[in-house]
Image 1: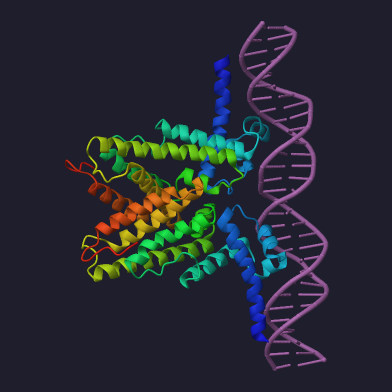
Image 2: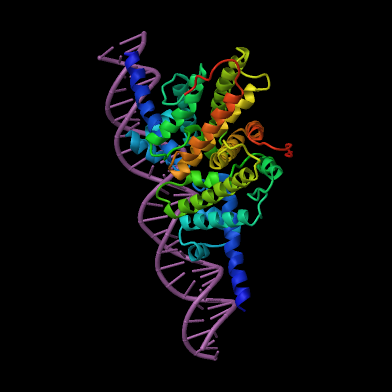
Length: 207
Length: 207
DNA sequence: CATAATTTGTACCACATGGTACAACAATTC
DNA sequence: GAATTGTTGTACCATGTGGTACAAATTATG
């Protein structure tokens, strides 16, 4: 039946995307060949051409898939931040993730995005779309806290969002290089302390 | 004579290293082939084998060279930080650099380091050596300021150093992805503001 | 069932990749 | 100037690379 067909189709395509995501995340786009993805996903060249046409097409699909997974909360890390407690654990989840993989990976979007050049128009635009979405999520969190009177007037939501994402990206990259979580721990700890000083009215409830 | 020989030798090797550095910085190690380096430096395979033996050997030399350039202040950015003013312009120099290259590059060490895997033992150890050196430079700056009574007792030099480097790495990576300096500007601006709150005794002299 | 559409297997291709072999050339030292 | 050392040019190679061609199998739909 139709549903079976779509399921079957999605299944094969999904296996390829998952394999690609894993390899891109570990070795980068340039560090991963199409054939390696095919081997890992137990598929052939014809499926590759059928579902993705080119390598960049595959990269694009991988990014969109990742974006969807993150949006729907199906990743160990995420952007569903509703409280100060959520916010402070936002950093911690990245650290936990890295610890769980021996600090051999940084943020997938950072890794993939950093590999793209101006030629990769489609894939880059997918990365940027995700990036703006994530900035928006954090910005919205801070906006809401500010509207609730929990942030001093000088606090600027967009700056705070970019500040957090920068620390996360840099921290994860440095952790990966050192195969150790120390640097991200140190920097996120300071970021949290700083942002606490921008709060007002009420006790600090974060971890 | 001997000097001419060494100069000639260094010249060829240096041309290769400079070409490799430029390409690695722009496209990453995995995004650059040995042949591209040879073409750019107008050299042949025999010189490659003679001076570097393998691609990783070349990467290793590039990192060591870069480390040396940075240590001796021959790069637009650097770690010669003696005053609060120096410190605050430390961030700005990276932003200026990115602006000067259309935000098409991030930090060379971050780009190259992020491409390496556990197999690249030599190159990774070179990256780590540089990284520890740079952490030490920033840490020392904060230690000295603290010793001079210019930082509150709660301020921890190592945390502050890692915090700054994380923001720099993350900010540059994000800037490169977005081809724009906004995110690094936002995050470094907050970092500077925060660190100002940790200072005491005396006016803020930074830019 | 027939037929159309989707999905997959096999073979192939031109070119890029990292690396080797080895002779020729140039410079330095004795 | 002979011998040693350092440097470069040319040709080559096995394997990896992204991608194509096309027929065969499988699945949906009339």
